Length: 196
Image 1: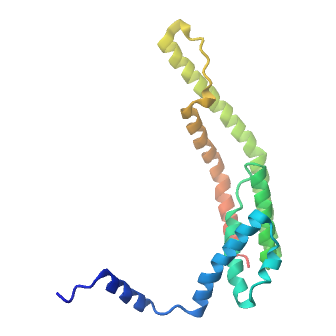
Image 2: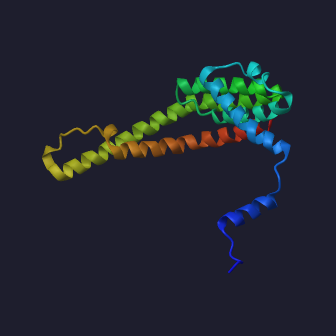
């Protein structure tokens, strides 16, 4: 009967097996979240990253930078609107400030700018064509359904763009059209993460 251990005893044994956290691990746990907060503040209030970093001791700045870079990279997205374009520019400027390999960063940025431009130009054209095609398809289906039910009274016009089925189908098509861009974007984000 005394062999049965409580959940607390089992948890304490597991913690003992893990061993004590090193000073390095403690610094990481404390300062990576600090860096994440700094990046969020930078994106919201446009604070000066260099000035903010200078407030920390030299032995912890690498963790601050690590946390900040992660948040900045996550905030680079497809330029779906002007706000997204501004956020991208701001996040990219911040990253360039934090990274020491400026040439490597600029090489990835040129790839990013290329897919952003393609997304805005050819992607916009593809989205317009897909939208018009979907709209025409839905209008034909609804017109046929109305004609079958009402016969000769089928002169009723239905705004297909307001139909939930149309909206849902359009979201699926947009996601499908955007997936190729998202895959490239994710690849470039990984490249940025690897640059020091």
